[in-house]
Image (cartoon, rainbow, N blue to C red; front, side, top):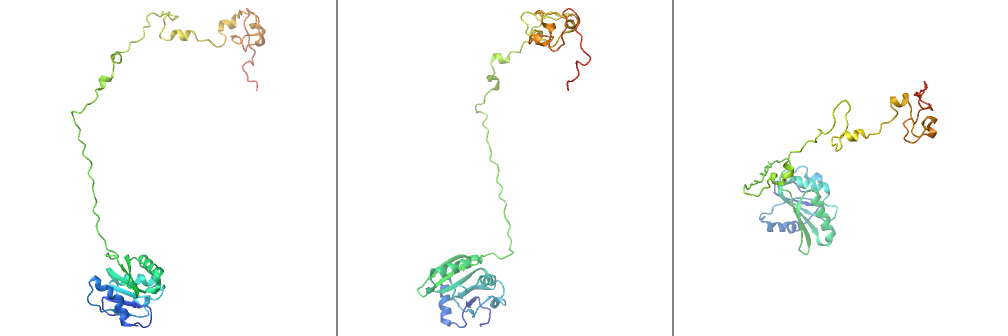
Amino acid sequence: EGQVGDGSILVLVEDVMVPISVVYNAISILKKEGVKKLDPVIITQASTQSLTSVEAASRDIVALICRSLEFPSDKLCGDISRVLKPGGTVLLCLSSQSGSKASSTHERKLLLAGFSDAESSEDGRSIVITAKKPSWKVGSSFSIKKVTKSLPIVQIDDDSDLIDEDSLLSEEDLKKPQLPNVGDCEVGKTRKACKNCTCGRAEAETKVQLGPTAEQLDNPQSACGSCGLGDAFRCSTCPYKGLPPFKLGEKVTLSGNFLDADI
């Protein structure tokens, strides 16, 4: 297994041995991104334990030479993100025989590990997948400027046509209401409604009095002659309805338990 050095490029290999030509072919794509000096540190049989001694955010590029779908593992992808600098690049080199399924599987692993902008390219012999680590550091902070929105200015045109409220009233609405004339009603000990009464006295006089009066109890009279015979012979509007039978002209007497409840 290779030793970890101070180089900015770290290469992780799944196998025990790998030709150096394979390593340089895998990272040759980095020359397109302006990397001139390729002095990688190679770790064979790479695993999560292989990166324990690598400082966090210390590598610009991490390249992986993959042979199977199991490499790199999800845990190793997380460790690669740890050792990469913000904005650093991760590169996966697959055999062209692996097919599109292997390419999509490795792209998904990188996305789940927090990498972005994953892209695939093929040169006939191998498939190369590149992705970027976000440019911000864990624990970094920044201020959010609060955007204040001013209220819209409403301009009122004084010359605009406004409705005069007084113009909505007619002449009849502006007249003062007249109180009803009650001078025609007779006023005295006994008030009597006039012919054209408007004060409500006529309606009060036409109300039907319920129950017999004291005069009717002391000197009972009957227009039909059947009031004294009892309820069976009385009309529906008879004032004596509900009272016991009595003789006409004599005072009506009520029994002592007349007002007691039947129950």
